[in-house]
Length: 184
Ligand code: IMP
Image (tube, rainbow, N blue to C red):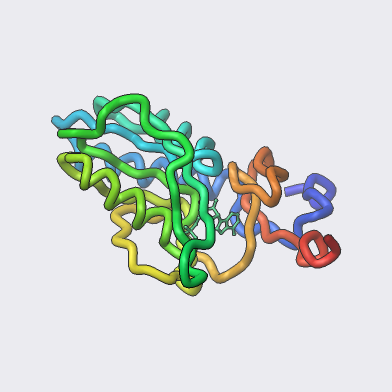
């Protein structure tokens, strides 16, 4: 990629758009094979996963529909991080085969919460699909069925991922310069 095209807040590009898209195509082929003959519901975790979910949906070759949830984290009793639903699905998950699509598994708290929540509400199956996996940051175990890339514990932005709502539009995934968050 032309160096001048790199956003000045980005330290370096970790994954180019073409690398991301080829991996998304591979995951879509895998998911299509695994769910052939079934109706799949893609549950997209807002907001960071919208680019990933949209591309995944384009490359799937099976019956599928899409829905959205939005979560937020807060510090609960005993300083333990908790996740809550800010916006729920538009339809009942009961009896559905759900693929939870998330941009990144970091602490694992969001995916854990959502998986339990969907299972408790009677989903027939819940599998997790993440574009990025940061295992070094994990606080709770998450079973990941489909994983795009495993990355080190960097703060990354682009392809939907943000820092304070910025940088989502970047076509690539890049490591954010530390000066962006240190100089706040
Ligand atoms: P969790 O810690 O696994 O629950 O991840 C929750 C959310 O944190 C993800 O969906 C992302 O929105 C955000 N997040 C975690 N790591 C990064 C990162 O490196 N860049 C941008 N957002 C991140």
